Amino acid sequence: MSYSTLAVLAVVGVLVVDLAVYRTRMVTRKVFWTAYAIIVFFQLLMNGVLTGLDVVTYDPGAIWGPRIAYAPVEDLLFGFAMVTLTLASWAAVNRRANTARRRGLDTDTRPSSTR
Image 1: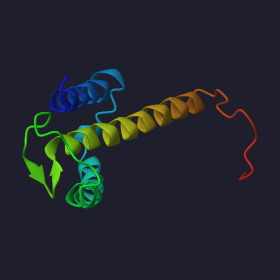
Image 2 (image 1 turned 120 degrees about the horizontal axis):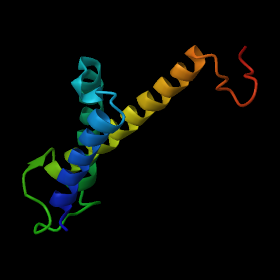
Image 3 (image 1 turned 90 degrees about the horizontal axis):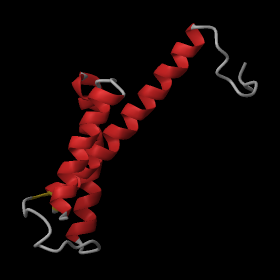
Image 4 (image 1 turned 30 degrees about the vertical axis):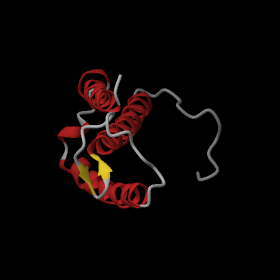
């Protein structure tokens, strides 16, 4: 399986997890896209450095070819999948904890030192 195919599958998989499994609908929120714009700027900066200086190289047969700031577009797809899955997972866990708290269930395993 090529790097490009894996990148597309990662994006599709994360969208399914966000929209259908966790149902956080992270990708439908303006705040997500605002935060992601900041993240992608730094991703492009670091990818540009690493690929521009040939620290990381790609087999031309394994990628589509188009690049943004020296980075193959597949890197942006993987970055999107990684960031989105992390944020959606965080939101889903937080939602479960808040739901349990509203129902009166104790979600703390030990006393907090900040209380």
